[in-house]
Image (tube, rainbow, N blue to C red; front, side, top):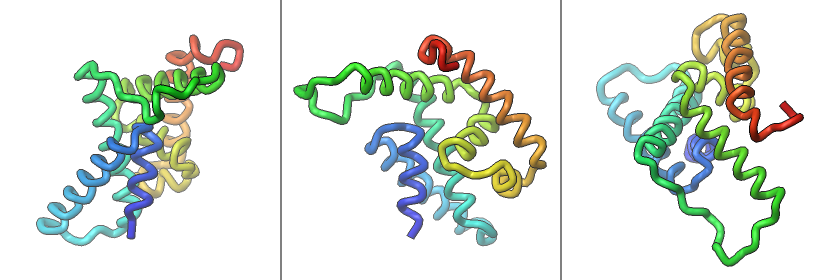
Length: 156
C-alpha cells in the first residue's frame, strides 16, 4: 500500500533503483520490528516518508565511507550528451553535499525540496515550529549553495 511512497522518496535521494529497494526493505523491516514492541503509529505515512529519507541518507553516507563508485543505470554503449552529463554531475554533487549535512537539516531539506512538503507540513510532521523549519531550510540552502557553487556557476 505504501510501497510507492517509500520507493520514490528513497530513489529521489539515492538516484539508484537498487539502493532504493534496499532502503524500502530496511524501512519496512524496521516498521515491522517497531510494531511488535510499540503502540501503533499515529501517522504511518509521515513515519514512512521520514524513515525512507533518513535511511537513504544513511546509504549515501555509507557509500561515501566505502569509497565505492555506483555503476551507471544506462548501458555504457549509449553516447551521453553534454547537458545530461552536467545534470548527472550536479545530482551527484548534491547527493554528496546532502550526505555531509547533519541528520535534521538533511531530513528537512529532503522533505521540503525532494518530497515537496510545505514548511507548515514539515513542522507538523516533525513536531517543531514553522519558524524553526524556515530557519533550517534557509541555512541548509546556503550551505548547499556554497558546496555546489562550482557546479552552478552564475546560476548560484
